[in-house]
Length: 378
Ligand SMILES: CC(=O)SCCNC(=O)CCNC(=O)[C@H](O)C(C)(C)COP(=O)(O)OP(=O)(O)OC[C@H]1O[C@@H](n2cnc3c(N)ncnc32)[C@H](O)[C@@H]1OP(=O)(O)O
Ligand SMILES: O=C([O-])CC(=O)C(=O)O
Image (cartoon, rainbow, N blue to C red; front, side, top):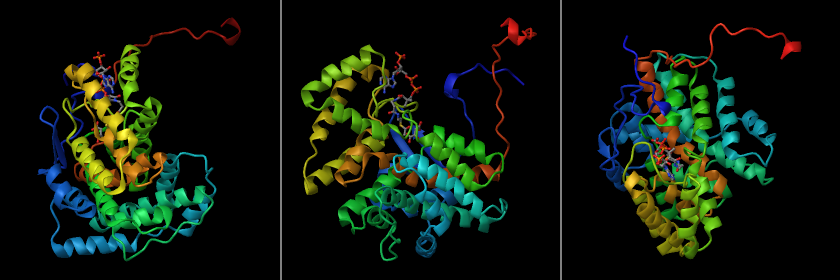
């Protein structure tokens, strides 16, 4: 076997063969199973797109209706999971609550039958159906309220927004939220998906796969950046402060949240769609003062760092959309997870179809034959 050059962060190293999604980072193109993201955002729904990613083809009318119905029937969480979540500290981050709750599902469904398509389908349905209920339950319980039951008459996204604050959402907000889920569902071999595939390759259960991916998504260099963007816009506070703020970050070699991407060297196509969705919401529900600051940031960062290919990524405008819907900032990353779970499950299924355990190598740069020094001589 030839020895490969070590690449920090495995940059440019293929970790799998996959037909789930495709990115052209120079042209700003993203496709799911060959279909452009712009087309899916305009015409599809989250559950239809999830089906496409997981089973490889757009569902027929009957197949989609059956999948939607199965998801609807599995939305409730077990009382024992709910009671466990009640014991979580209300000051804890909702991503940690979600990771623990997703892992806890494995306690109830520990029998693994990874070669059985019915087992795969059941697990997919259960995870896609219950993750939003868990996020919403923690949100209500940390405020001291009881979680509400899912509403069977509401579709996937409208039901989630309803469960968050017990109010039926505005139809435009629910539609835009569903598009946001489509935009976040899948993105080739990103860190959390890689984590999911590594965990899947050991042939463990899908709840462990999803729990490890949730843990990976939460970091500020990955999905956690959407939360940090809003904090940054609040810190900046005014359009006039954007330039000095950006210049200071660049001078200190600090990362500007919501900008830059390992693959995209142009503006992320999802950021463009999210910006348009934010504008649609502002025109119905009123402006957000942070939007002007965000636009000025995009201009200043392009001027200063455009030559390095640093432009807004998916996390830059999503927070402004969720903020306008009245969603608390620390739920932005759990919402990302609600979407991405379907992408992780598509990769789980694909990994199982041609599995080999991940076991890369390392470049050892430590000592050899080192002496053991007795404790009283150290
Ligand atoms: C859903 C997602 O995960 S999307 C990404 C969300 N994350 C963020 O928004 C956090 C901010 N962005 C970043 O930290 C990075 O751009 C990442 C992690 C997304 C990608 O990182 P990498 O591919 O490893 O890029 P790397 O850190 O090597 O940067 C390459 C160059 O661009 C610069 N750069 C990259 N991103 C940024 C940024 N956000 N702000 C300022 N400079 C940046 C680096 O300083 C480096 O410059 P240099 O070559 O002069 O040293
Ligand atoms: O692809 C990546 O590296 C990060 C990611 O998950 C995304 O952009 O959606």
